[in-house]
Amino acid sequence: MIRLDNVSFTYDEDEFPAVDDVSLTIEEGSFVVLIGHNGSGKSTLAKLLNALLIPTEGDVWVEEMNTKNEEYTWDIRKNVGMVFQNPDNQLVATVVEEEVAFGPENLGIDPAEIELRVTDALEQVGMSEYRHRPPHMLSGGQKQRIAIAGVLAMQPNMIVFDESTAMLDPQGRNEVLEAIENLKEKGMTILLITHFMEEATVADRVLVMDKGKVVMDAPPVEIFSRVEELREYQMEIPQVIELAHELREQGISLSEDILEREELVEELCPLL
Ligand code: ADP
Ligand code: MG
Image (tube, rainbow, N blue to C red; front, side, top):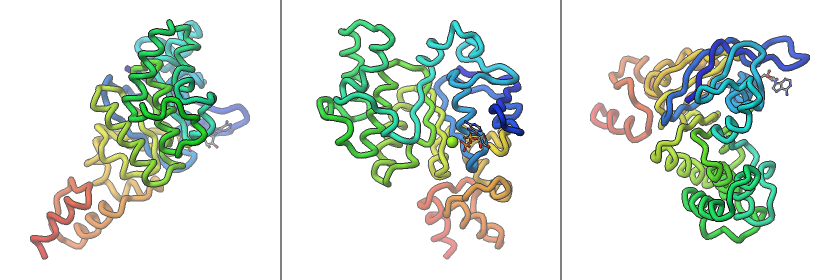
């Protein structure tokens, strides 16, 4: 789906590259989570994936289209949808259904087809009953789900979520995560950027960024077993994983693949 070959990006005026010699591929249908401390280059990497930024060195390929080739820009943007952090900055219309129709309308799609897409997209995020409501009256989680519906209406092959749950309350976060997991079930390729490390446990693969480089790239179980390394990259370790790690250090025999509280409880109780 996506291939990066030795990609670097330096902002004008900046001394150091925000993305520094990154090579990786993202397989169709995979669920990849990208974590890293503030300023590690996650958002810059995200924007390189849909031609919002063009590499200063190296190449980004989206379905064999090089993002450098301006002929492909719209195809690429349609292919790789983005949902950002602040729901209020993403919504433009006064009624939910207009909001969702906005993208396909700009693509010049036939109104009957748009109607079908809006209905389907709202259903996929569980927001059908809000179709005729004004977006500004919705909760943060609902607004983000409308933003996701707007992206879905473009029929992308991949969606990048750039800290899309960061500004939400716990309920809103859960709503949005549930919508994302539904999309995964349907085979959507997903890149989820998050600073909530617990969100990485459901991924097929976790990437960790530090100083513009992808410094770890492995399944969640492996990533979370490398606690000392994660600390080095200034990641906050989820409590359960940290506790399991500390207990193992103390010589208590626990398996390496504990990610959830219930798993830890299940292994600890017999020992007690
Ligand atoms: P993250 O999303 O991981 O917090 P970013 O990709 O936003 O990281 O930032 C990576 C680096 O690029 C940081 O050092 C940041 O200061 C710099 N940067 C980000 N956006 C800009 C910009 N528009 N102009 C100049 N420097 C930027
Ligand atoms: Mg960011």
